[in-house]
Image (cartoon, helix red, strand yellow):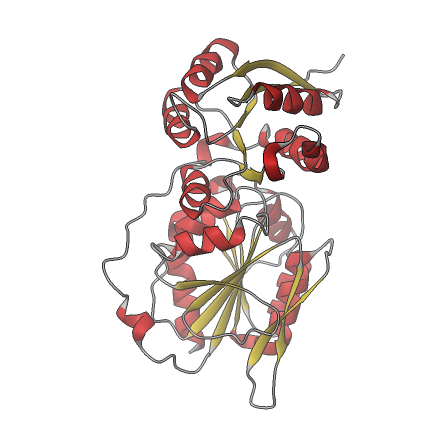
Length: 348
């Protein structure tokens, strides 16, 4: 028999550990090798059992989930998939993703064991993907809370000259937090990113992110006009496009149903509106979405940037685009903010 994915389930509710264990072991490739009732017990069992990945609740006694993540990432590093009902708490969702969990999955309402099967495939998929991360590239993001209002955000926005469109998938929120806490404010551009993140989590995530980001962070909503100095976020579960709203060249968002290639859809639409004033960016992620969108940006005279394969948690997105010659610049994660700002300034 082929090697199975070994999972440790950490949750203080007995019925939930059983429900999660039964759900995971319904897949023949997954084996639950143990359960723990709190973060402290989970940390001990990680060291004893050496799981490939753990599922982790947040609201637990003795040592809660966030405390556990901090200890685990230092003392016994292992990929973590958070499974919690506390997705509406912005501090928790942001902090967990900042600290480097693979994903934060919203536990079904009420945490009813029968209801959790609605999310079965998503949870099983996350477990399998989590085992293939380039773990040495997972790091907590060091953030600094803003001291008062950013002067660049209080000024009346000037004309929108460029648009940075950013794509990623699983583990992308961590890289994106790092990017948007480093990208200088005051640039004559807007930015928009598609994240592999639950729409349920997005409002709380955006609210908390605004305490640290150099730009204003907002949700990309249907019909919303794009403004300079704002970074818009939407879930890649939806088709997001940029459209020309009027004859004066103002741009707005349109949101459609699910699509198999959300990054290509966004990038192609942005290139059609902003043409040579488009900067395309691919961060860490799996799959090959975004390459065709990069080709459209290049065709219109815009520039494309990819995070280097060596610095990615998942290299697939950027590797695919690089191999297809769709990338103008390959940049280490630590230099992405500088590279994007330079390209925007050149387009101004």
